[in-house]
Structure formats: structure tokens, C-alpha cells
Length: 187
Image 1 (cartoon, rainbow, N blue to C red):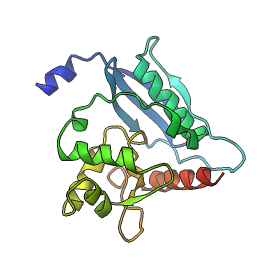
Image 2: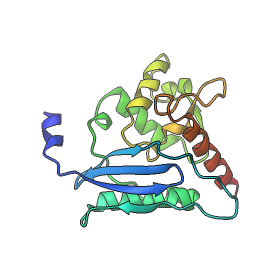
Image 3: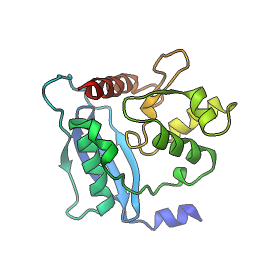
Image 4: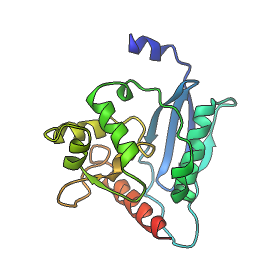
């Protein structure tokens, strides 16, 4: 039933050029379905004085208010990330965000782990109400359809190591994001 409802959506995709490379945001009138970070370039060099930009590269002529809100949030995240806490997040419209444990973990992460903070997989499992579900938390991070908005890059190993990102293909991006937040949080 859920798949039928989602298939009835008329999805549109906006492509952004960001310091991480190309980001594709897909969604419908009901909300954002996915954010995909394409690993097409090396992350931008950071500079303390110059703001980083995130610009629309390709967009349909008409977009939903939720997609536009997502674009504005992402633009703020890269140029003035400390301001994202005061911005409204777009609505989400993806089945992974309506399930049981995965949904709970992702919502706890979104609500309780703030900009510039990190949390271990173990601690996030505890926060989500199941301290023994450390591996399931890792699975929830892999299923996160809206990275950056739901900050799975902030989840690290108990040892302090950053841990995998985008199934290990985006580890350098995770490190970039954590450094970006740390540097911008101090500014």
C-alpha cells in the first residue's frame, strides 16, 4: 500500500552544485523523497574567511514548496551552517521515515544531535530506546534517504573514529562534513 501511494507521486529533481560535488534532491508536493550526493568531484577546499556556496545547477520550471525549502536549507548549510537550526526543514515523504525502528532512530538523530555534535552508534541506539541495537542503528544510517537533513554523518564509532559513510564510498565526505561543522561552529 505504501509503495502504491509513493508511485502516485509526481517527483521532480533539482540538481545543486555544492562543495561536496553534485547533490540531487527529489521530491513531490508532499515532501522530499531523497537526497543523493553524487561522488563526482573531490570536496572543496575550506577557507575560514570565504563562505562556501551551493547553487542550483538544474531545476524543473515548477517545484514544490517542500523542494524549495530543502534547497534553501542546503544552501544555508554550506554558506552559513550555524543558521540551519532556525530554518524550517521540509516535509519528508519516504517510506523509510515511516517505519518502526529505522524511523525512530532517524528522528532521534534529527531532533537530539545538534549542529557540530557527534554521537556514537551505541549511544544513538540507547537514545532510540534499544541499547542492544547498535548494528541496527548502522543499518538505519545506510537507509537514510535524506542525508545532510537527517545528519547521519554525525554518527561515529565509540572509539572516536568517524566510521563509514555512504557504504564506505563517502568516508572523505563524512570527514569534510564533520570538519565543516566544527570550523563553522567555532566561527
